[in-house]
Image (cartoon, rainbow, N blue to C red; front, side, top):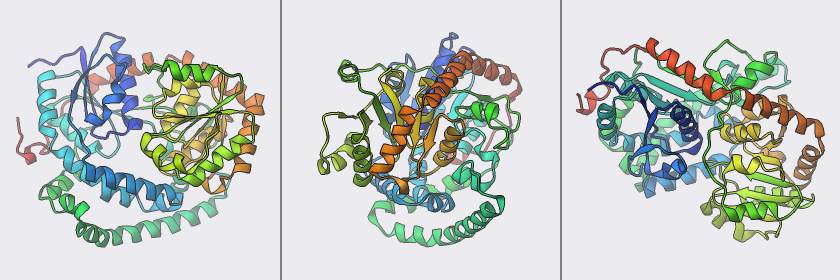
Length: 470
């Protein structure tokens, strides 16, 4: 079968919005050039495809009820932990309760994915580089399809361990080294305790199906392999601004694969939401902590109480599941609206929305950047502290540690953002630069120019080990 040089394939086994949306935006950029896009995504990603004119293959649900319960429980626990614990425990809690079981379920989907890609023969395969990176590399080698991997991490990986965890800091290097050494010790200790924790977990009914399954050993061997050949790697997001403005604060290496945030979004705003946004002239604060952070009643109350001290209205994007757990315990003012799904870029670009509060996730920050909206970041884990420090150093927002959150501090920080005309101008100027930077066109040209260099490698043992060779 001949390669279809006018189609691309989007594949993600992770159902998390922050990892899937950038892939869809890249695919939309190629679609504008006349390329067809075929998406291979779990059933949980169906809502993400709304508004995109893509052909899609649903891989079915990748999360069953037991896995969903473990996932929600673990995220709630991690959201209460310190940034130090989350970073230097290497997220073993999440790996044991979510990533490993998810890989086991994804293992069952590989034959379906392989059959679809073999039939399609796309120009290239587009994937996220988180968790399943080695799987995608092996799959692309097995099928001899060039691979493009996307990351939103910018230059974070090039920094010292302290900066990776906490972001750009004015702390002296000796102090940073002390934290790094303590963190390395805790990381080692956590690694040694992990087998004991896994044995304990395997005795519980919720984990028995995952840890006792015979395919787990095969799966772990496959994900530990070291495949030859390199994929095409691209990055969209804050990395472009780090490269341009923060060379004196960060280790920056010249990388032509770094681009600004992508603007291709098709989400439409519901009329009811638009009417609520436009019904008053008071400034609006838009809040979203993404799909992976579990906010508790204390934090929600502190934020709402703080904003209640200001002359603002509040729009909070929060899942129905979290709303059911949190809102019954609070008194909600008429100036506050909670929505299950909000098209963030459409909302943030409205003139009434003057400030965003988020967790420092790459997607949330990019939406504020593109809209020219200043923000207050309250990071929890992963790359959020680093992203938040970039926002602060670019003078387009502020960072607030979650232990500092109380009504008075929220009122002070948000009030200062709303009254800071220089921050508003800086945010608008960066948004203008990003929109005029023609990121989509540059990204498409870069990938197309790299494809001839992405030669096919010898077949990997990845899918043969599953008994599904060609």
